[in-house]
Amino acid sequence: MLVLVAPGQGAQAPGFLTEWLDLPGAADRVAAWSDAIGLDLAHYGTKADADAIRDTAVAQPLLVAAGLLSAWALGDIAPGAVAGHSVGEITAAALAGVLDDDAALSLVRKRGLAMADAAAVTETGMAALLGGDPDTTVAHLEKLGLTPANINGAGQIVAAGTTEQLAALESDKPDGVRRVVALKVAGAFHTHHMGPAVDALAEAAKALTPADPKVAYVSNKDGKAVTSGAEVLERLVGQVANPVRWDLCMDTFKELGVTALLELCPGGTLTGLAKRALPGVETLALKTPADLDAARELIAEHAA
Image (cartoon, rainbow, N blue to C red):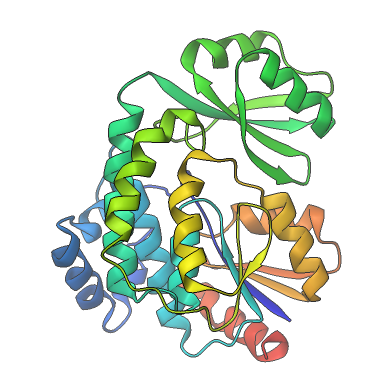
């Protein structure tokens, strides 16, 4: 059984869309999306520097567009389940048929702008903690006033909070944590700092008419496979200010009988977690179009 996953913010890198736009029809597709949401996705995906694409209002629609473009390049796919990490959940919602591509990009554009506005209120950020016992780490973060914003499994938890709280973490790591790595994001996402963005996204969601997912849609909230399109949309809104439980998503993949995991562009982060948490599951990350043939072979072997 194949699980198709979409990465979240921080996976972007300068120029990562360049080779994808060389595919026949890709540039026109991205240009149409750009016009629809008022953001030059081709520019940001090919010419912009790391600081420019770190901007939340840019990074989020750019990542969703990249995921949708790489899925389109694959052709027909019949995964057993889909999931996305953080903003990747919007990509997954489109892959599952809950939203069409235009609706997904419109929603993520509003999400990125609203979260950028919320992040501007207080100087905040996020950092990944590698190693350590999860319970010990979570308790230590809460002692420092930080939120375990992403519990990713495979020995990784992401802390979020103010710059002062993150500085305290650097000098006071939880027992067993090997490294603390600052992430390429511009705010404390999936925490109470994002409360205003929830309100803005809820208003934007009122204009959408979601369909029920055509395949299992595994939610970041609790790893549950959600069968109602309305509930998927409701969870997309609330998830902005609540922790991502990718560890529980991977538990659900196991229960569903996953045999292969394919990560859409810009792949790498989620396949890395799966290699450690899902032994025996074949993984592949779509980084460039050169990976498409291998991805199609994986799909042919493992998809329904």
